[in-house]
Length: 243
Image 1 (cartoon, rainbow, N blue to C red):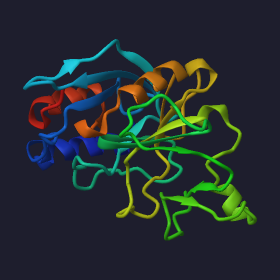
Image 2 (image 1 turned 60 degrees about the horizontal axis):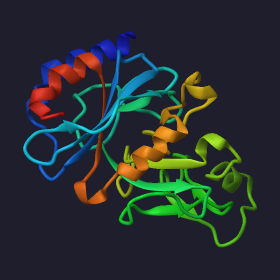
Image 3 (image 1 turned 90 degrees about the vertical axis):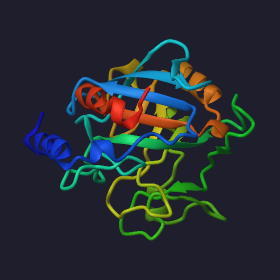
């Protein structure tokens, strides 16, 4: 683990924040991602449902990829330790913590999904703003006409990239309270090279598994994404009431 992340872990233990948070009681669906450590770009994913008082695993575990340089604390539902290193734009790390799961996006006119899961077909006019200087940072924008400026073209969601042909939003640093420069455009999407390549900060998996995940996600169950290194997950599991 790099020195800055060692410090973050130490501060987390000392802060006592682990006892001040737990998963929302109305959440009955949770995708858990476990990495070996803060600098790992590999993740094991398991989907859990809560039909009663206990979490139950739904289906088999999947393999996925994370940011090239591993994990760093993100801005979601769970607290980050005081003084901890936080996700930054362009740091090649995946945000860690607990996050809401949002709508789906893709190149196709429609996809297999639950009717209550929002889906948007991505066209050349759809932007996702990754410019920290913009008041629209980390937001979706749909232009009335095709992009005409270099800035607009740089923000386009559709880049003829098969890996982004299907995406599911992870609500890290989400609007309307997005912090400038704290990381944007964090999604689940299709992995590159059959899983041989890490990401810039997203969580990727095979197209088959991503489609299965999207079909399973039910917004009425308040679905969440828990992504942590294994030691931190085990330490926080009871206090945060994780699956």
